[in-house]
Image 1 (cartoon, one colour):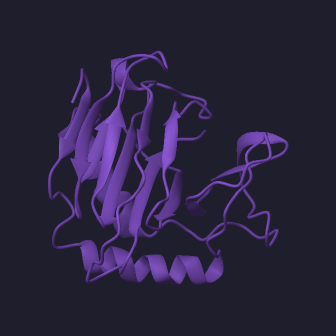
Image 2 (cartoon, helix red, strand yellow):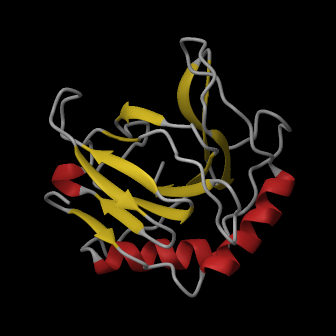
Length: 199
């Protein structure tokens, strides 16, 4: 995709059903919610987290927090399968020391999108981002270090994994509005699991 940025087509095939089952357990403990940006806008993507830290946004800003603000309890533990697959994808793409401590869980309904942004709330930018795609296909825009850099659209389908780090770690990226459809596992939505090393 770019220097030190890779698309692994179908990497999750064979593990997809187990991932969806584990997700149901997580989202029973920490439900999906539409978070509010610091500017007061409700995000179209529904989110929750698992792992030692969870990414949150509200009027106070973007950050990682050890507690779910809705329950004031710890986020659900990251399933072993999640961690194993994220680390395997990282190793395959040249990042052998990646160990995630945070997994954001994004649910895209038709029409939901994510504007171009950088992942920069983590403390160590030497660690890559490993992003799983499940369910409906989506168009992933991958740009450069500047918001105005040209973007390249990539089709992300069920079972695909994107890994980016090194020179591409702070590249802008986003998801175009999701088109309507249905999938046999998660149904009429797309599930995205970006794994990060927050601390």
